[in-house]
Each structure stands twice: as C-alpha cells, then as structure tokens.
Image (cartoon, rainbow, N blue to C red; front, side):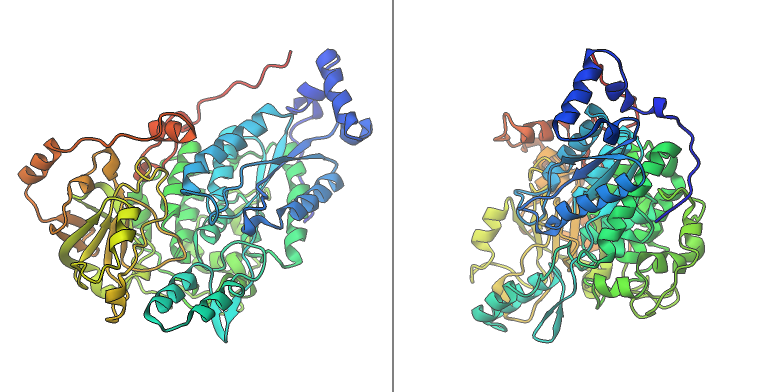
Length: 582
C-alpha cells in the first residue's frame, strides 16, 4: 500500500543515529560490525532502522510461515528507503508450550520492549498471531512507544473431514467426546488427526488468536483488514510487504502507539470483541494492554458493552462458519462498517488516517456470515459474548461466554464436586462410581495466575464418560483458570481472586450448594458468612515449589485476572531512560 505521509522528524531525530552517526570509536564499531555482515555502508547509513520482531518457531505451527513473511516485510522496508533488521522473539505457540503460554505472555512483552530499546531501532513490524503473541508483542511495543505496526499471521484455511466443516479446537473437543462414546472409531480419530489443520496459520475459528488479531486491527494497530487475510493466501505476503513500507513512513511521521491508542480505540476494541463472539481470554489481554497505555478499562466496562452488542459474526464456536468464510464475506472491515455508530470513526490507525476513513469503502458479500445488528447470530436475550459475575465465590469477578453455553443452565443450583488439581480430576473423573449427576457443578481450583502457575486453559472441564453415555454434553463448570476461545459450554472462568492466594474458591467443599444466576450476574455458594470465615481461619496458603526460575518471578509479581495478569513493575507509562552508549 502506498500512502502519502507528512514528514515530521528529520534524520538526526532518529534513535538509530545515536548508534550509527557518531564520530567516536563506538560509532565506528557499530558501522564496522554492520559491514561485517556484508552490507555496504550506503545500504544502512542515513536510513530509518526498522526492527522486525519475529515469533517464528519450529514448535509453533501457527507461525511456520513467518520466516517467509519476514522476508516480505524486508522487501517493503527496502522499497521505502529503510534498513530492516530481523530479531527473533519468544514464540508462544499455544499447543506445544507447557504448562501454558499465558505464563510467558509477560516474558514476550518484556522481551519485545527490551529488544526495541536495546537495539538501534526507529520503528518496528511485529510478526505474531497465535494467542498470546498478539498481546505480548503489543504490550511491549505500547510500553516502548516507538512507531510500531502489527502484522498478524493469519488464520489457517478451512478444514473439512468427510464432508463436515471442521474448525481447529472446537471440533477437536467435539470429536473427542464422540470418541469417548463410541460415535467415532480410533481409526476415525487418527484419520482426523492428519486432516483437520491443513495449512499454516492460526485457529480458523473465533478462538483467542483471531479474536486478538481482529481486536488489534479494530484498535488501529494493523493495516485495516489485515487480520482477516488467510495465512496461505497470496494477499498475505503482499500485506506483510505493505507493513514494511508503512513502518518506514510511520517513523518519519513519528506516529507512535500513544498517538493511536485512546478511549476511542478502546471502545472500538470492545465493540468489535462483542460482535465477534470473541474469546473470553480477550478480557484479560485487553485490560493489560489498556493499562500499558495508561488507559482505564475494567470488567464492568466490558460487561456494559456486551449488554449492547450482540454476536454478529457467524463463526464457530458461537456460529457455523470459519475464518476463511469471514474473509471472503468482506472480513473485519465489513463487520466494522455494519457496526456503524457503535464505533468511534475518529480513532487513529497506523495508516495515518482515522478508522472511519479506513473502512468507508468496505462491503459485505455474505449477510449470513457477517450479520446486521437487527439479525444477530445470537440475540442478546439468548446469550452474550461476555457476562460478568460477582458474588461470595467471586468478589472481584468471574466471566462467562453465555453465547456458547447451554441456555438451560444459566440459572442453576447444584452440589459442588471440587478438584484441587487437573491430576486429581483426571484420576477420578471417569470413575464409574463417581458421585456426579447432570445437576452437579464441577469445580477446578488452583488454576489461576499464581496457582496454575500462569492461569492455564484448564477451564473447559471434561464431561465424565458416564454422563456422556447418558446424553449429557454440558455441565456447569467453574474454575479460576481460563478456557480456549475455540471451546464452548457453560463454563465460569477467571474466578478472582484465585484460590491459591486465598480467594473464596479455596474454601469451597464438595457437596456445598453453588448458585449460578448469569442473568443476575451472580455466583455464590449457599453458606453463611460465618461458615466461610470459619473455613478461612483453617486455610493456609499452599507452598510453591518454585523458589527460583522465571516462574518464581511470575508468582511474585503477577496481578489477578480482573487486573490483566500483568507484572506490577511493567504496568503504567512511567518513562524508561534510553540506553547509554559509551
């Protein structure tokens, strides 16, 4: 994309010139060592330096194509008169990283910020897409606050198995339950394994990856519509090249995240999140990103927006289509245009124009996939993208995605069956003598930020085989952990404060009566205050096995879910000095 820009800064204003332009021995060494890599002096001197933060990894299948995309970004940077330097960054690939990528989101945020600070970089393009890579990279870029553009990895192409549409994550869970009941065979399961995820790219459902890249797009941090382009589409490397070109212009314009992020862009993020039927994980990431920018955002703000904006995008797990279908229907720009006055069109984007201008010519080509507000996929009275719950089990909040839950269970009263760990649950859940019925409330605790550690996606608790065989496919399930955005069910998540730091979930006992009333925004245990206080007197904080390592640092400094799970020393906008060069 070629866009005219207004130059606001001169070469001497650029950070990189501190490294390359000085006449002392340090400047000589920087120029000398750059030429050591085979570059001519003319190729890097007097040019904006664009860092390319690449989260490619052989252990991150969603990012398998990002080495090629980095080359496309470089083409755009060179074309625009910049000097590109590619830097590897932590790849938080959702499937392979244990115990959870969430443990390492803040690690990536720290790395992104410090890579940008410690190198001679004037602007950057960030390559990511899998769940935590988007917020991690953006949190670092927001805190560093140099011109930055996000290049999303793109969703994988549609899956299909034996004539059935298959979406990553959503159908994995669905077919796993069918395997347990004998509806499909072991041979079917093995066949499915090799066919379901058939190209590069992130999950093709409205999971966390597509939720977060779409939100970043709506916030103005991507080229408008970039988040919808499938990873394997030839338009994707062209978009990556355009990111490189635009990053150079942003440096000359001095267009930084602080110029783009505002109350208006946060509002647009919330509107988009709700209309997408997006992942519950966005509730944590958005708060963390907002706080990095010095902007106010709470779960109450999200809940208020969810009460106004119904699910309009007909994608799994709330609908029937996949991301490739969304792209061909017009993608995110078509959705944003349909949202009309709900959006603040004056919000700035990385393109140097306001969002209203960026989407003005967009059209929708399939009104079943991208719905009009008067024809939602899930009417507000039937379910919402986010419902905030509070009560004596969740004083600081818990959340649900009622649009992907069983409407019959949104008001429910039943006995708790409490597990203290996934290992304990796995050992007992399929015991034929387990005391469980369709009215039981399954509870997993010690899966929060500190307890997990890292707040793993353990919240989509398994339905016991004995109930699956009775035709029971959903239970009320509660945890202080998270859930994959690709999953579905009546799951209460992010209970805050978590059990491991003394939240009321730590005091719950098997057999206690749990009361869920999603319509009233309540989550309670039917016990008097005096009994809860008596139990608290007998509770002691469990000792952590982590006395050293990054995890020890994480447990000491991470905030609770309703605060974004960021580190206390990384929040806010206090300035950090530029590195000394001697």
